[in-house]
Image (cartoon, rainbow, N blue to C red; front, side, top):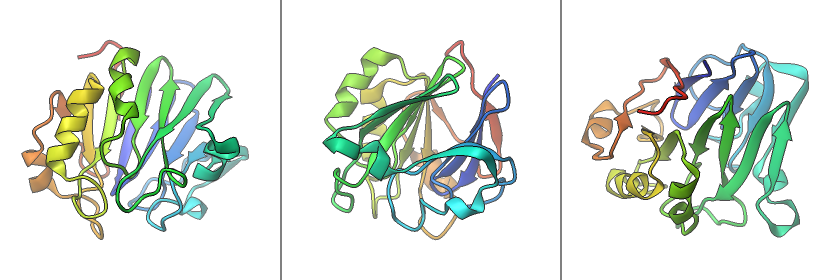
Length: 201
């Protein structure tokens, strides 16, 4: 069963059944010792792009927002059976020409790594692709707050919703996470690893 380790802030690690390791927006917390097969960076703010923290396999593939947006479109990638699709991310502090989210399909599980964003037009299309796990920011400073993040969770329609990026300068904010009124929500504290269920709710 694939797994997700939430490291804190906007950082997490995905691990496939066969041990493939993907880091998303490395910056916060612990757990960077497992050598990476893939590192995904949604944008170039310093709290999302610290790829030097990650141990890396010799053939590690680093996909940044620049590669994801090369050619003026949101690109897709397939690496050792793992599908990665860049998707829209934007808000008042993040230009969509320089930021992305990703939909990662790993062992049959679809994970929406939204990056730093507020509500986007593309989210309206996600309910039709059966996302299993969606991760949303909710700090209300650089991104949408928890109210808009709950609205986005309802729009996307994932089987499980996880709130992250709640308190810049800290790993997490448990009280804010508890107030998040999203359907099918999971509260995952930093340092906790969860199994990613293929079977839905």
